[in-house]
Length: 120
Image (cartoon, rainbow, N blue to C red):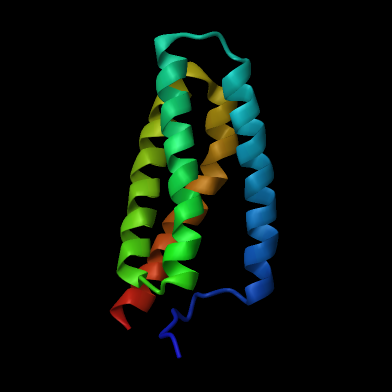
């Protein structure tokens, strides 16, 4: 009964995309923790972990509690944090920038999808 966007992909696509993105996130996290303990790396690690916690939080907000507005706020926070992360990663750890870029695109798209449902 949700009002979904006409751009909403079939359900199986979400599993495939998230499977790939979680592998990229795992590699990114591993690369972050292999780097030297500098202030820049500490900032990147904190931002990375914070957006991961928010990523985890989105699922119960949206699917279990049906708090679509709160889930949207959570996604917007993920987009903002990941944008800042990418800005810092471009300067400090270019490989992680490229690993995280598909995730940023997907959470932007997910924000749009969540927004359309919230409007519905």
